[in-house]
Length: 361
Ligand SMILES: *Cc1c(COP(=O)(O)O)cnc(C)c1O
Image (cartoon, rainbow, N blue to C red; front, side, top):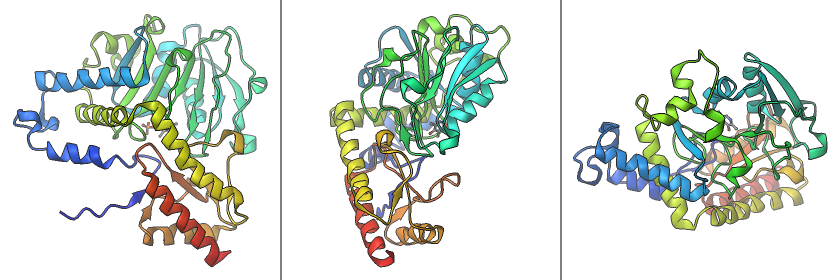
């Protein structure tokens, strides 16, 4: 079989580790002597329950999740949580939202349907180049939770600290940087992510939530949006996204085999440094985000003009790289260098950038 692969810099769904793909492929027709693929298994079968429980155990191990947190596997991705969070966690009808990009803006807009939403900080005037410092946060004390997005996938900015919210639980959308570095789960009331960036494939949303926060919620909400019901049924109130959960388990084993999140962070920082170091010494390319809050997952930059941006994208395809076009709201180039992007891919990109600059600078 010829396996000609490209370096895929997609923001999501995104590249997966080759060893994970190979392992899945090798078991596609007959998973561990079950005589069937994981896709064909009953979610209640012993073969599948083994996969399910192992995935949960691995997530708990890799992220060092304390016992008083529930791990929920939910269909509907991160966006569904934008609605589910206020329905479950807005206990007193109030919530605070920190708007640092497109997804946090969407989540705040959705929450406004359900209660009194206070925007703690709005980065839109600075075109989301900046993450607020503690001093810039206008937090309320009598609010149910503070929502933030830990990594802004479109703009390429990332929180480098956990804000002090005076004991109010923080709810964090970590879709694009979960599993990229160690975090202290107990700093958060809830963490959630769509799986298709660093965790695996689309179809799965992962919620890690402190038990005491989900014990009550508004009376009449759709049953599949009740965190307590999902928790009581161990994510099997209905059929969970079985294959996506299996892929997550394989990705977690790959991270664990590499040495866990500390090693993952070191590799990610090395990869990001290759790009940012090159960008910083170049007069040709401009980075979008401010240097102190640059994302190590999504690197955003522009060429001197839009025609060159377009040419860059076109030529990069010929050089074996795809999905480098920036999001339409930022323009330019975006290289998403999630966990599974090999260092060789980033080196190839830097070499291409250098050549492109020489030819067009
Ligand atoms: C991709 C992304 C989302 C949207 O995720 P879906 O699974 O498509 O709903 C939300 N937030 C962030 C930070 C993202 O990167």
